[in-house]
Length: 179
Image 1: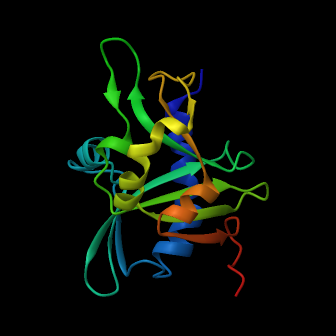
Image 2: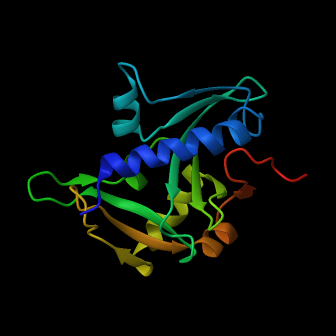
Image 3: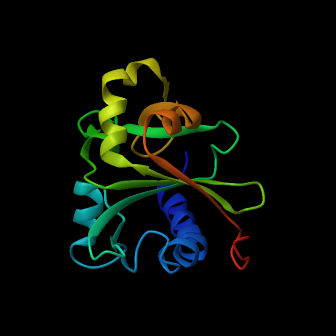
């Protein structure tokens, strides 16, 4: 069985080592940011609204970002879009594709070199496009995790064609982004 605590710790480590310096601190999408790891409201914002980071944009606006770092799907070229967070009898719950109120999905694949191939996706547009046709995509899960998460595998190229998406390649921790 996969361990959520271990997976989540690794995801946060990659976020802190790569996404923070190359996206959030470099003002790629914002000028100020708050990582929702700790504090009284952090679990509620993450679990009820599907928001991992809040960013103040360069024009003074505020956007919410849902982050996913996938170190197992780089070769598949699919986004794993979660439709059921928990499938365990008596504990069933919707996945972040249903409940998240984020403005952007920042979905990253860990590359073989341990960098990140990132996709910043307009999340409301993704949901609007996905749900009417979600049954055409292959199901994944239930995963061998405590919650038995399920969802749909959606080809990266298909999303990029149909939903506003920006792609970025970020080097491993300690390396600079090539100009």
